[in-house]
Length: 268
Image 1 (cartoon, rainbow, N blue to C red):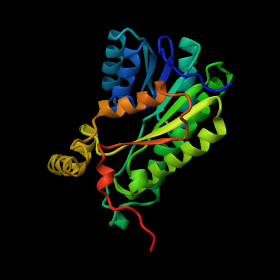
Image 2: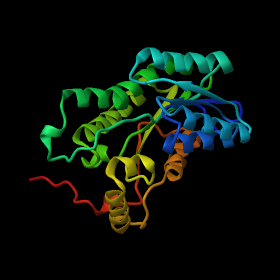
Image 3: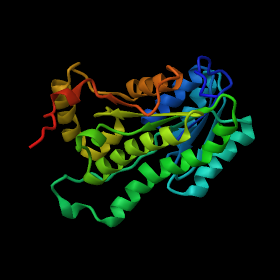
Image 4: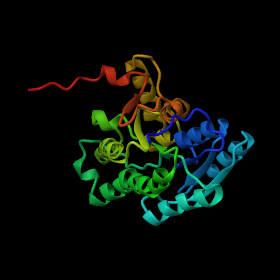
């Protein structure tokens, strides 16, 4: 039996990795607003995670706050086990946890193998381990399950905070295709690719001055004259969760049309 469209999230259970702030927090709040119980995962920001959980509770949905580093397989298994122990099921996985190192792409000495291993460990291996941990529960459920992987326009344009980051997000998109094929028809799996997202993560990574400059550049060069926010990316994630059951293995660019202004790839 194929995955049934989720029209009513009441009583469903979602795990959102990296949900103490930003896109993950916004997604958790969207889910809770629709009655879905949520596992709020954090690596270091416990205060942020607790604040998100409080808002989920206020929305009328239960939230479970758990520390875990998704690069550690035992932590991934523990996240899933905790959700199943508390609610007896897990229906939705949003792989949002991510990391990077801000290095100019031309600075080849700015990255080493440890940087690649650390970034891939969270952005790619972590997502894989979370999918592997939830898959037995999805396969055993009459309703199946849904996975949304949070990638980046870096995956399809080769831009972004560093070469390692762009490469890891490209790998995440490819993995989405592979596992959508392998785990169907029980599991639907798609990816969102946000562009520049307004918020503290980029502000802290880029510095205030460069951050403000890039906001203006991205707005000017986007077809809609806007940049993404945590909430607009969460809207795209929710589309894949509650949208048509026939969609799997797809990648949705969420950047206000910024990619349309980039030079298209041509054959030489």
